[in-house]
Length: 172
Image (cartoon, rainbow, N blue to C red; front, top):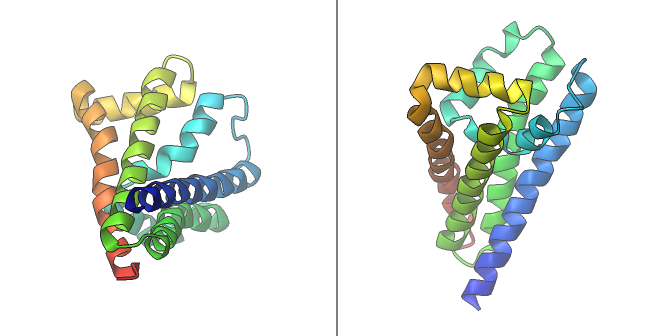
């Protein structure tokens, strides 16, 4: 029975996280002029890309918000980094039987999202101009192996960071 609750909590957490990312993605498509709708790799990777923003990046996005050229897009971009993981963690914490199950469900969601984003960016770099630029910037900063490690380790970092909130909001 505990395994069934674990799987259910994980799947609901994953669905909420991807669903809220999709809502913010649709908002950014409609608000940002010239969004490349023909680049399917970019659109699909955008569903998973907020996971590669570490908590310090999220904090800095709010600090530099007043300098954003378009305040509405800046606010939505900052909220898109914090609302989906927090809502997914809170719902997962309330659904899980224990803090351990809710932590594990979010942690697996974060790691899976990070891995999917890595594969989309890595294999889409030859197809998508935007993903090519993203991969090139990661590779220039971290090197080839460092870019791979960075794109995978941030899921673990966010898994632990937001996973701690799952213990706060869990039922036990």
